[in-house]
Amino acid sequence: MTTAVAPAPAPAPAPAVDALALDALAELPGTARRLAAELGPDLIVADMYGDHGGPVYHALSAADTVEIPDLLAAFRGLRGPLLELACGSGRLTIPLLAAGHRVTGIDNSRSLLDVLSGRLLAPQGARLAERLTVVEADMRDLALGKVFAGALLGTTTVGLLDPALRPEVFRSVRRHLAPGAPFVLTVHLPEESGTGAPSAEPAEPTETVRTSELGDAQCTVISHLVADRSRRYVTVLKTVAGRPPVLLTSVVHLPTADELAAELADAGFEAETTRPVRATATEDGSVHSLIIARSI
Image (cartoon, rainbow, N blue to C red; front, side, top):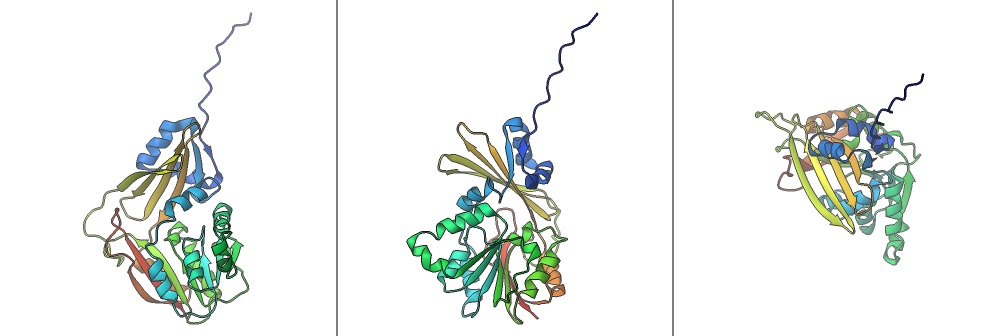
């Protein structure tokens, strides 16, 4: 005799993820973690700088000009080509080109490089494009066979590097620079003083949430700073009526000024200056700072 057994309910499908976002999904804290759990199987999880995220990141950051005057001043009068690491969609690249610099831009995000190419297709972009060389590559493994008069790692992108990989990136940059050439970085330093000194007061996690409209999409940006100020999780929830929601993830490491100075020195740089880019701290208490180091 055969007994019919009711089939067990099928488990809910896991959210769709890309490889780069998988680890970040497992670590998500705070509001982002709650949203991921609530949206469940309908959710697409993707890396902030991949195919899903690149155009959204560009739209959210294109109007941010905070560090541009400081960067232009740092390279003013410099002769010879510049190397821009993680050039993305050209938020900093285009002002450098407009200032007359020749730039080699490196990025491993095809979606962001496509945005940059599109921006230079306009008639006014043609003369700028003549001074730009774009290379799709990982800045952790540079072998360009060329020496540059200066290098830039802006938009606090140094925080996207795993701390264990930063020293090798700095050494790679040094190999591509002429002696005395400036290496300019913008970073979010985790203490309000920007000095790298630990705070005397115990810290708590800090989270900010803001929502904006991008065309037919609603984008909620969640920035979660962990208690020890070593990492920030930046997550964007993009929702469009009639489409699956997309959660874009990014983990930003927050090295102190002292840590960066030591790593730059080991890589063959001498720190010249570290100063705030803007007069006030960000919402989570970190400081947007400019670092200039010289190759030795």
